Structures are given as C-alpha cells and as structure tokens.
Amino acid sequence: MEKAMKVSIDLDKCAGHARCFAASPELFDLDDDGYALNAEIDIPAGREATALEAVAACPERAIENH
Ligand code: SF4
Image 1 (cartoon, rainbow, N blue to C red):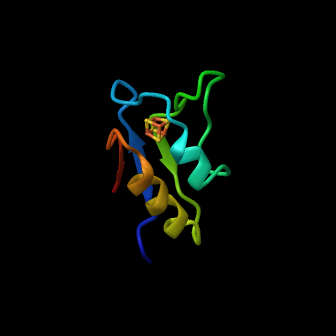
Image 2: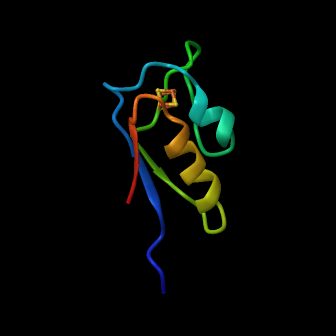
C-alpha cells in the first residue's frame, strides 16, 4: 500500500499570502489574517494533485510534501 501523503508548513516562513488556501481550500486552514494554522496536514487519497499545486503556489516555499 502506498504511504499517505503529508505536507508540512514552516509557520515561521508563512507570510500570509493565502495562496495555499486558494489552491485547495479543503486542505488548508488559515487564521483571520491569512496565515496557515496547521504545521502538518494529512492529504486524503485522491487530493495529492491539489496538495502539490498548493506546495508550488506558496511564494515563501513554506510548504513541503513528504
Ligand atoms: S501560501 Fe505559503 S505563505 Fe501563503 S498562507 Fe499558505 S503557507 Fe503561508
């Protein structure tokens, strides 16, 4: 069985652009100022492509998939 995908967000690097949320609103939670709330997110099966779009969309390179 394939290992489930996760992404981690370096919350210190996050600058509140909310691009991750724009790429996949169902995966990312933001605070009222547009900063990512969760440092670790489990990506449900079938959502890997949108998760990778969010990784690519972050201008701070704060999101990593693993
Ligand atoms: S796109 Fe990057 S910098 Fe912007 S809110 Fe998401 S993690 Fe933070």
